[in-house]
Image (cartoon, rainbow, N blue to C red; front, top):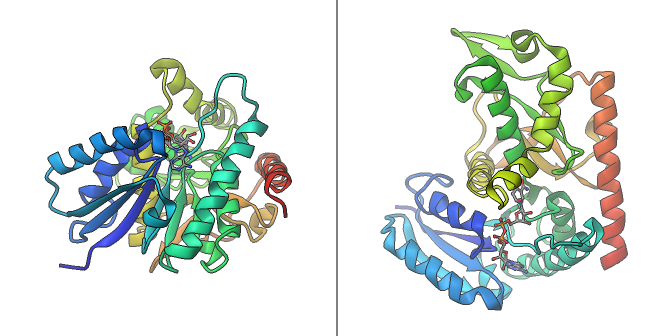
Amino acid sequence: MAEPLRVVVTGAAGQIAYSLLYMVAKGDVFGPNQPLILHLLDIPPMMSVLEGVVMELADCALPLLHGVVPTDDPAVAFKDVAAAFLVGAMPRKQGMERKDLLSANVKIFKVQGEALDKYAKKDVKVLVVGNPANTNALVCSRYAPSIPKENFTAMTRLDQNRAQAQIAAKLGVPVRLVRNLIIWGNHSSTQFPDASHAVVDLNGKLTAVPEAVNDSTWLASQFVETVQKRGAAVINARKMSSAMSAAKAASDHMRDWFLGTQPGQFVSMGVLSDGSYGAPKDVVFSFPVTITGGKWEIVRELQVNDFARKMLDTTGKELEEERQEAISVIGA
Ligand code: NAX
C-alpha cells in the first residue's frame, strides 16, 4: 500500500465538513488504494464539537483512515499536507454587509496562506470552499509565495453540478448523460452558468444541449437564474445552507484535480486568471478546464456570443471589486 497522504480540512466541526470527511476518508477523492491521515482544523470554541467528529470517524472503522489530527493550531493543521480543503470561514451574520464578511474572511485566508507557505508540501493542492471563495483563494495564494499560484483554486463545482442537474431534469434523462456545463466567473449570484457547450448522450448519440433543449429563452433566463439562486432556495427550504451537495462538489473537484478529467469532458474551477476569454487578469475566475497529471489547463477557443460576453464582463467586474476590497483590508 502507498504511504499515507496528509489531507487538511478546515472548518472541520462545521456542516459541510461533516459530510466531506466521510467522503474523503472512505476513498471517494484519492482513490481506493490511498491511505490517509486527516488533519482537522477549527477554532478553539469548537474543539469539543470536533472531538465528537473524531469519535465518529473512528466509529466508521474506515480501512483507509490511518490517523486523525484534530487541532486549533494552523502550524499543526498544515504540516506536510498534500491537499487542503479550506472550508472554514466566518459565516454571514444578520445585518452583516457583504463588505464586512469579505473583510473578516480575507484575514482568515491570509493567516492560512502564511501557514500553508510555511508548513505544507510545496506541491499542495488547495481548494477554497469558504466564501467569498474566489477572493479568499486569491488572498491565500498571495500569502504563500513559495507554492505555485496554480495550486490555489476556488470551488464552483457545486454550481456546475446544479446546472447539470437542471439540464438533466429538463430533458428527463439521468444526470450522468449530461456533461460540459460551464460556470464562468465568481461563485456568487453574478456567476454565469452556460449550457451552450454542453452535450447530452441521447440514445448513444452525443447531442448539443441547446439543440436538445430547444428553448433558448429558458436557457438564457430561467436556467441561469435557477442555478444562480439555488443556494438561497436551499437555505429557504432547509433553514441551513447547502452542505451535503457542497461536500460532494468539493470531493468531485479534488478528485478530478488529483486523478484527472475523462476524455472529452471538462469541469469548472476557479483558477488564477491569465486573461483568457477577456476575463480580468489576476483574479480567481471560474473557467472550463481539463486536467491531466495533476495539472489543470483552461479549455481554449470556445465561442463566446454577445450574451455570454455581457455575463462574463459582469462577473469579472465583481471579482475586480472584491479584489479591491480585499486589498483595502490587507494591503497590496
Ligand atoms: P459552518 O458554519 O457549519 O462551519 C464552518 C466552520 O468553520 C465552523 O465550525 C467554524 O468554527 C469554522 N471556522 C471559522 N473560522 C475558522 C478558522 N479561522 N479556521 C478554521 N475553522 C474556522 O459552515 P458550512 O456550512 O460548513 O460552510 C462553510 C463555508 O462554505 C461557508 O463560508 C459557506 O459560505 C461556504 N460555502 C461555499 C460554497 C461554494 O460553492 N464555494 C457552497 C456551500 C457553502 O455555502
